[in-house]
Length: 122
Length: 110
Image (cartoon, rainbow over all chains, first blue to last red; front, top):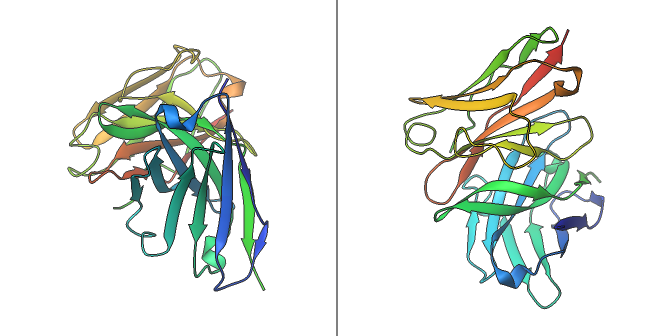
């Protein structure tokens, strides 16, 4: 059974960098699939942040692209999210997920982590 | 890339059918049969309910069905049950290897 678990600081100061890691168990990242990050501000809807392939190929939400970096470490079977220059608007529950592709389109989030709340505040 | 448009809320009585709409554009929903739907209960992670507009993953009840016409996708829940009360989000491929979510619809079982 594929399981994902997010980890990282729950509180980040404005203008600093938000860094989260997603540990994957039950499946080897190097075997394939895209892996993604999605966030949800409190009381609001879902927002796609970006996807990464096991080879390191990345795709980002254009609205966040200038501030986001997603990376993968196949040796430890985890992938990571860095979001710089954060503001209060980045306060959200951050989810990691395995992304299932339809043909060459990585679009379906089939396995999700439980999510981790990150608050941006001084 | 813009968010897809969903009604804020939909309600129905047990046993009834309800339909949630998801309106996009010719750049996303209208151009690709790559719409998915997610169910989210409070405090929980979303769950994939429909993919490729109308297909159900293994284990998802056949009371959930999806369709698409033009720039609008729809999710229908038939035989509404108390456990169906949740938030529902549509999602579509939006070109250039990006995806977009809808704003979400709160389903209330009366």
